[in-house]
Image (cartoon, rainbow, N blue to C red):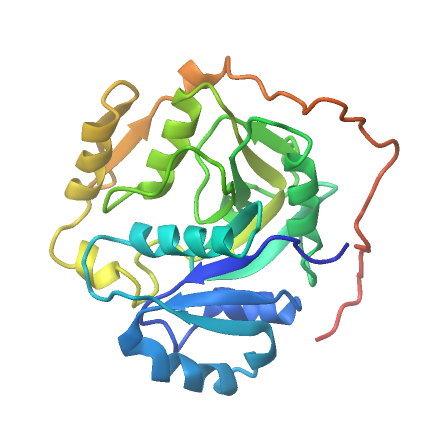
Length: 284
């Protein structure tokens, strides 16, 4: 009960020198795949030995490179890989997540196993209409402030658990996480964001590699925000804040979407910590 039952994928490009997400998962003993473009294969192979994570990682070489369409194409390829291997769902993670956390008594505690992934899978498995879920960003959960353990019907970013029978796929060059979430919600289905489980993601554009150079060096943020407005003009507007263009999404219309239990689901009594225990004198 300490690791996910569904495959975990990281889509990565040009970040063999950091490999933040993979190193974090390897420390937690979570086996996972890294989907890379062909030109990066040798660099990532060397990095597996450099960081001592080869036992937890399998590299998957994508059949395309430098297409400029964003990460959606690689994420869809991972989705197909999961289906081909007869899984019901899959995790897909950005490659700039340094740690994972559990919210415990309003404190953000770093976790050292994959138990939070397994707990999230079991929670989602109770429902028949939550095809997309994921972990909240750590920096959005302030210590000693009350947050519910989960929130339905909002955007899911960067660390997603997707059921393979979801009717929508990744599309668009930018903001593909938001687009996928909105398409699910517009069907009347639900998303679930776990506040109880968090990802320590780096701020966008801080880490080199990935799509940073292709997307932001010359284009800035206007095209990124405008694309989402064009795709979802009914709930999205273009705003300028802190000297940059952003998109603003109104999730209010989706509050009426209700999660539905699968027939025959019986909620367990008592607490299940999935083998997790609080260690107050932790040493590496």
